[in-house]
Image (tube, rainbow, N blue to C red):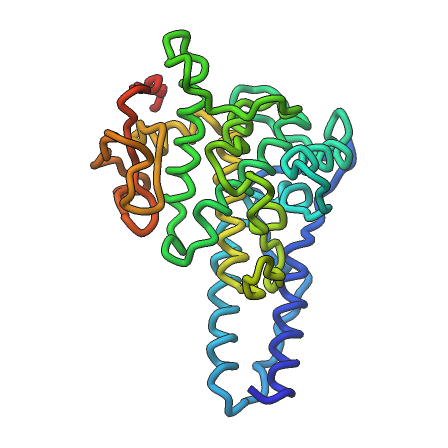
Length: 321
């Protein structure tokens, strides 16, 4: 691609997606942002003339990607708009990333968040709820969204999210196996689903802060991740950006619309999953026929669901209309 064309398309992407990323969210106590309110991603953006023709085919591909990403982003931005100003920030960490990130959300929101969201149980969302949205979304993205094999399929985010919800239910069961613990120990995080999401024994993305995708998700259309231990530098792209939105939407639904989320994922009755055909442990049984959004969760290249021989589980029956 010529230097002129490269600079041109980079400017377009940076300008448009910066507007999508930094969506303004009112924080005045007398105004209430409404999830799902009709809006456009770029409300003040005037139509632009088509870019000058460039001979390089790469520009055409990049422009096509941008248009597709813009369309996909519009489809989910309404549901996660308030979260865009809170979740997925990259403040840096000094030791335990999950705890540092939780403290950062608390610092920015205060004890009573001014962004008012009503959960489906009628209670107002608390700062700890926003901490949970942030941490759960990071785990979902690092586990599912970073793989192009699962690209474009939001059902996989929901399936892994439901596994986390099932683990919370299991931990509340007085008859659970006493040797099975899905929660992170000694954490300041109050939300139990989030405690399951940041358990380093279950999710290696939180073990020794191994995953840059979790610590600093692709909240920009272009983000560069420097390699460590001989690994190459990686640059995220438009589709990574959209998948982060999908993870954020799933996490928001889990925390703010748990009843609805349970109904959408009621077929998932597993406590374990894998991202390959390899069993999570000895004598585990693969669970088949469990569908989310019409897609069976039995993809050996993305998500497969499993039952443990020592931790049988039957989730509470959701009250679905």
